Figure (cartoon, helix red, strand yellow):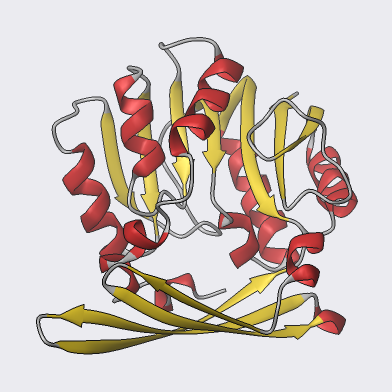
Length: 243
């Protein structure tokens, strides 16, 4: 998994393309689950810091990391006024931070960038960085979502036009996405091409790995809502605890 190859130029338009995500709802779900503003939170794959900045407003002490320096530049611009946020450049499969945390979060498909072996390594690392009783909240895009996707999507949003092409490799539980963006710059369009690989994870397999590592009280929700996960859910949100 080489996530540093992703989002280099994409970071500049990421927030515009993700403007349909209800980050406030996601953050509310997380804060309601943690039920305290004294928690220390480790945020993996923080991206451009949308969740980070909202949690900072709730007075959590946050250490957020991502492998993309370009994403972190955007994140830093959003959180630099907060003294309760630390931003780091780390890899999900190799991160080492000299602290223990009350909670860890990983939002917006961070796990889908990891194959099952790397996801297992990530889970083990999270476990080691949590205090006893610490909570782990993360999401995945479900198999149902990926298997329901069309081969091609075309979007036209404000100053960005893009073509999204999917190539599903179900035998190897992954999907390759080639995204060609045309970003308006004055009287011309600049082209940005991104090729990403997402991995399809089975909810039961993820649950079994978490249990084997030692996580307990595992709950699964339909996205960032209190509704229980269903077969037709497009996002699965997990909550579990360190034993």
